[in-house]
Image 1 (cartoon, rainbow, N blue to C red):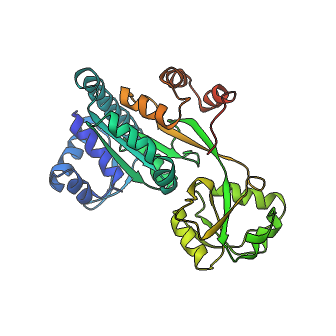
Image 2: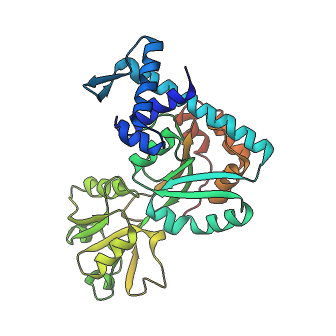
Image 3: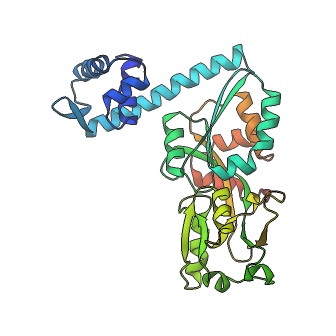
Length: 324
């Protein structure tokens, strides 16, 4: 059994059982991957994949267990490399972050600026995606950190640490009737078409929850993953915008009126997540503290020692998080 074989079967699953796409991503040949998969199956005496002709059709029940263990082994191999890097070149390495547009555009720029100045030899890569894609990224090891508001519930081995609370603002053109109103109620919002985030993004669930509590249904006419896109359609008169308050740019959005909506919607919490068992480099601890000052190395290490997400939630319940 070779590590290369384990990597091949994991990558085949990551590429939806498409051996050709797997070979292309690994810069190798399709026959070479097929041969190594067969050799591994022969050695184990069990099928990892079911086939129809030359095509892989699904993972067998035994294969699912083998894939899971292979992912854990490959993650450990990466941890060994990280340990070596920490001792030989502590200020060199790579940091992959998976997040949403709102975090990348409004929450992270100052953090990234300070981090890259402190660690010029660390290669930093940011990937924008959905909560599902972020879950997959930390599960597969293609991202070191995922920064999200919606819980990454699809991946049970993710450790999620709360970073800050935030709420929403209503945005309308200056001539809109709501711009002249004092305090806006949820009933006011219900009478207008809304432009907001796609469900599953940037705390969208809180909007639906608020309307459901009072027996109303929001008339959402346009959704997007990007607050800047939402503001563009507000300017076009498509509807009333509901976006994260941090996404208001006083200079670029001076043509819009932003109205605080924290009395209408419950606050959301942004967290940073990573795979349990990951070896965290010193610069990774530093990044977390820059993003969320209460996440000092001792605090993170204490959270790492806990066995469940409920224990982590209990640990942070008395820590006052910043509000953005």
